[in-house]
Length: 420
Image (tube, rainbow, N blue to C red; front, side, top):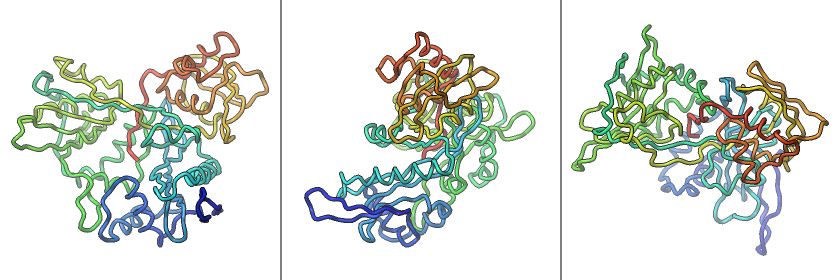
């Protein structure tokens, strides 16, 4: 239900309404988003029309704060399937396009939009809500915490001494890749926790095949496809580069997707074999990616940046902890603190490599932790023991933290495969 409330601090009272957007709101909605993210003022309505044409099914999840007809706050959510440890998936609410106009700050608009979206997500049965945070300090108060990290790699190609690719690679056009890419991506996203489904409208946009009239495509570059021994596609690389007067010529890895280890090796080796290139740069990669081990000189590769990537907020603790796999066996009773109530409760987790159960219990808690702490540890991106040392969890039974830490740990760092 739309909500209205008087807001204002010492100024004349202004009534804002929180509701979902309609087609008629699209131009004002996108102008609010563009202003907040410091984008140029659009000179026509092409972007609004494009957004409606490509995202129409999800307009009922485009929340807005309305001051009369003017949109002064936005929050949109998308349906995702999130890969959890073990390769299974859970339904997740992906929050994006979060803004509040500078003219309407400190009036609780974001809190009200967030409350509407979280209630809707819980009502749909989503296990978690996820987002990419523009600022660290905003989302903890709503129960979100960093769950995955991403890294940027820079490789000095001339010093790398990388062997050439050994498998079957094809230079293809973007249009040739388009029908093949989704199946490869879906296989790849299940290989590591943190993977996300890619909404169908995103494919043409991400590949530069669809864009507003008069605008440049969002991506222009080249594509290489990898095939396995049977000739089936199992990986692809999107990249771009440029050649100018600067002696440093950089190849940018825009997307490297591999459903097999063999494809991963060959696609990286291809990127490091392109003539004239002096350096290769790839952002948004797994923090534990084994790039240096591909090279004759591992010091030619370095991580130039590392930071939080996807933030996660649990909504259904039993569903979340039952869905993922565990590398060991153990039992622990967790008391989860959640002021909003969605994840609050005491839960008995009984896990083993063969499966897990997680159910509400009246037993005494072994470990008490806020929903933010459990969200950070859930995918294995952050160790529960490390978070506890920072005062973010309390142990009530000796050794219980060690058990919980060991159960939630994963062999690979989780990684988010899609920017949304």
